[in-house]
Structure formats: structure tokens, C-alpha cells
Length: 74
Image (cartoon, rainbow, N blue to C red; front, side, top):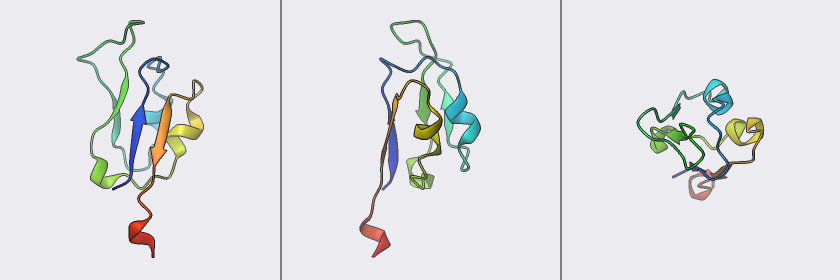
């Protein structure tokens, strides 16, 4: 299964990843704050993630790592 991981050490809650996700499965976690006081981004539905990497490309703080499941692409 493809997925993203957001490193909350670097995420400043800018929301750019949310705006570029074509699947609309990234959101800011309004219930949590990072150590720096930001609402971090998080993936809401890993099953729908296509690993397009738009979010990682757009992230100005390089806080997102994309993991692509290549097993299904054979």
C-alpha cells in the first residue's frame, strides 16, 4: 500500500500539501499541535493514496516522505 509519512519535526502546518493532493486525503490535524505549535498534516486514507508525490514536491520544509507500493505495478 502506498502512503506518505509527515515528519512533524519539520511540518509547519502551511497546508500546501492539502491543496495539491488529487485524492483529497491529506488534512491538517486540528486536534493536535506539534512541539512548535503547528497543526500537522496527516494522511486520512492510505488505501486511496496513489503515491503521486505532489505533496512531497510542494512541501517547502521537506517534511513528507512518500512510500510507493510497486508490487501491484508488475
